[in-house]
Amino acid sequence: MNDRITIADLLAAKQQRRPIAAVSCYDYTTACLVSQTPVDMILVGDSAAQMVLGFDSTLPVTMDFMVAITAAVHRATPNAYLVADMPFLSYHLSLAQAIRNAGRFLTEADAQMVKIEATAAYLDTVKAVSDAGIPVMAHLGILPQRITEVGRFHAEATTAEDAIALINLADRMIAAGASALLIEGTAAEVAQVITTRSKVPVISCGSGPGCDGQILIAPDILGLSSGHPPKFAKAFGNLGARFVEAFQRYAEEVKAGQFPDAEHSYHMKSGEPQRLEEMLRQSGQF
Image 1 (cartoon, rainbow, N blue to C red):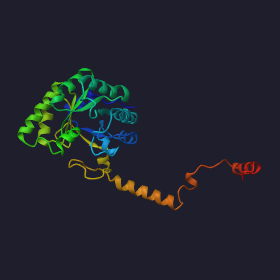
Image 2: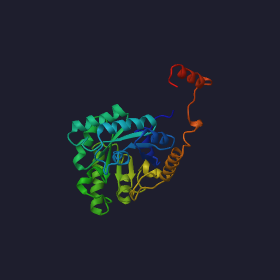
Image 3: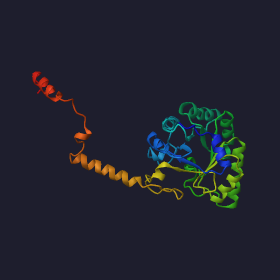
């Protein structure tokens, strides 16, 4: 078994300009497949609310749910660097709450880092969790947990004024103790400036090629997402159509009485059906 990737490995990748490949996935089966590839990092994202549970935002997922699926992903991928997403209201009420919930991901799910959607209001939270010995990935740019506040998402830092604000916020997050940054839906030029200035790994989620690494959600990579994926998503497979074809064939064979056949059924040992028939006759049940 290979050694588990650590934050030191990610820092070395940044320094050596080796791009970091990251995937967001939510279940044991998918993570088993990811573990057979050179993916460096897995984020168990709160987008599971949409991709797994069918909600229209990330807000409904709970800590218990996120801890459970993070533990499942870890069981499938013991070597990839594992980041867990802090769900809505898991770090908003107090610093003590934030530390307690972040710690659950490390102690109950064996995560190595937690991700916090971070505005300037949560600099103290990032610092408190980091000071407690829990590495933090600060999530900047588009912040899905703020959907009810903004109403509709749009690309971030597309003006010079907004760019300066985001660059300064990134600097402040690192100063507060963030061990990594994730920048979502931000102008590529600005994400590259942040990456160049940053001493910690910077992962792009739709923020251009100039970051230290890239992340997409597994359903988008596989071509499984329904609806309209974001502009930055790219399907590297078309498994959705193949899944539908497989389910179609299954249903047709069941309805036609073709499945299951003898090959896909269990059978009694030789001579036992005759003995069973005799026993049933003797008992009057046949």
